[in-house]
Length: 90
Image (cartoon, helix red, strand yellow):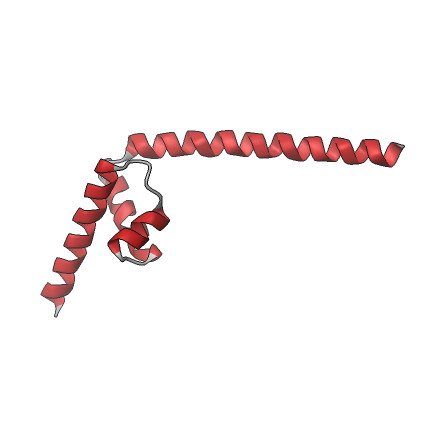
């Protein structure tokens, strides 16, 4: 039983790495659907891959996208607050 589980884990690990190699922009949700592994399983595989430094470029790109989105969200919030303040003043 343990050998079978280990083999399934290795197969899923390989499929995830292969998919990411072919489609570096693939989301966790897409990986879950295609590989048939839970979000926790995807998380563990990606964590192991990160520990080995295999996807640091993709991670760095995603972090930069995240930072840009956070800045955009903050700008939008500031604009909404300014609009509300103008509305209150009138």
